[in-house]
Length: 250
Length: 250
DNA sequence: TTATTTTCTTGATATAAATCAATTTAATGT
DNA sequence: ACATTAAATTGATTTATATCAAGAAAATAA
Image 1 (cartoon, each protein chain N blue to C red):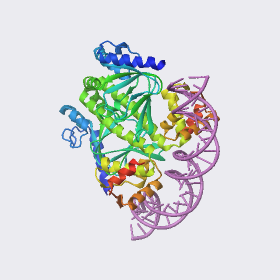
Image 2: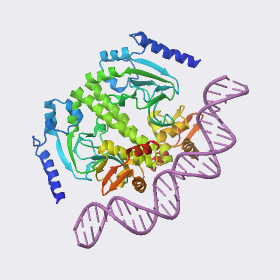
Image 3: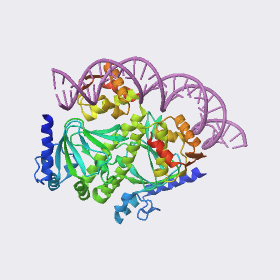
Image 4: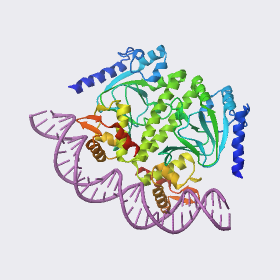
C-alpha cells in the first residue's frame, strides 16, 4: 500500500519533468532547507534553479545515485539522511564514505572533475532530494563569484571531515572505530544522543571497515558496559565521555 | 657547507620580504611551474602575486608547514616533492596523506574552512616552494570566477584521489597496499618506473598504514619475486602487471 | 676517520580480527 | 497469519599482522 503511494509520488515528479511544467510545487526562493551556498544567489538565479530542478522522494533503502554512471546533476538533500558509499569488487564490498542530511549537497566533488559518478548514494530513511542539472550549477559557478566561494567552502568542509575520519580509522582498532562512529553519528549526523533510524550492524561495519560480526561483538560490549543502549532500532548514547576516551585511546 | 649555503638562501628570501623588495628574482608571469589555476589570472593579477609572494628553499627532511599552526598562506611547490602528513598522539604516529610536486598547491583545503593547519608538510627531497598570502589568494577568488572555478577543479582533483587511496587501503591487506603505494608513486608522484629518492621503509609504512617491519618484509617479498629492484635508494618497478594484479586482488 | 645514532632486517611470539558455522531473531512479502 | 528471506548473535578456529628483540647495515655527526 505504502509502496504504491510512493511509486505514484515518484511518477508524479518524473511526469512533471517530462511534461516541462515550469512551476514546481516547492519554490527555491522560499525553501527552508536551502544549501548554504544558495544564499548568495540572486532572486532571478534562484528562480532559474526553481524552474529547472526536480524534487524526488526516495523510500528507505532506495538507490539515489549509482557509482559508475554519468554525472548529470548535483543533489540536495531536503529531508531524511542519505548514505554515500564506495563499491568494490562489483558491489560485493562496500565502504560508507559519508552521510548527508537536510541542506547538504551531494556530488560537489564531481564538478569539473570526473564525468563518472564516484560514489553510490542511497536513502538511509525516507528522503526528499532536489536534483539540479550540473550544467546549470556550473553556469552559476562561472557567473557568480560569491556562489563559487561558498561552494569551495562547502567542498572543503565536507572533504576535510571525511578524509580525517578515514585516516583516523586506519590507525585505530575495532573498539576505537566503533566509538568514533557512534560519536560522529550522534554529534554530526543525527545531532542527538539518541536516534531511531534503520542503521544496521552491517552499516556500522561498512562505515568503520570491519566485519559485521566484529561490529556486533563490540556493540554488545558497549551495551554490556552501559555506554550505549540499543532496543529495536533505537540507539542511545549513555556515556559520551567514556566513548571519547575509547576513541582517543584507539 | 651546503647547509650553510641553504640558510643563506632562506635568509635572502626572508630578507626580501622584510625589506619589501618589489621585484622578485622569479616572476610569476613567466614562471614555468605555475599551478594550473594561475593560468586564468590576468597579467596585473599575476604581478600582484609576484610582488607579495616569497620563494623559499627547503632542504630534504625540513618541515615546511606544521599541523596545528595558524593558516596564513597557500603554498606552491616549484621544485622537489613535498610530503603531506597527519600527526597523531603528539607526532608519535604519522599517516602520509599525499605527495605534492612541481605546479601543485598545498593548503587548498584550508581556504574558507579551518584557521588551523590540518596537515604537516615536509620536504621529501630538496624543495623550492612559493608562499602566497592567503588573503591575497582569497581576494583573487572573490574577484575572478575563472580562477575560482579552476581552484574548485584543483581541489576536487586532489581530494578525490587521496580519499580513494585511503578508503581502498582500508580494504586491502599488506601486499595489496604496498603494491598500491608503488603504483601511485611510479605513476603519479615520480612519473617514472624508477626513482631515486629518499623514500624510506618507514615512509612506505606511514603511507600504507602498517608497521615498518611489515613494509620491510613485503618489499623484500616483491624484490625476491623480481617485481621490483631496490639498491641504495633507487627503486625500480620491474613488473607493473603483476603489481596491478596484487593491488586488485587485495 | 672513527664514533654514534638511526634505519633496516629477520626470526620468534603474541594478539587482534576475520572467517566459518550454526542458531536465533527480526523483517518482509504473500 | 504464514512463509520466506535477511539480519543478528555467538562460539570455535584460523589467519594476518603487530610487537618484541637483537644483530647488521647505513647514515650522520664529531
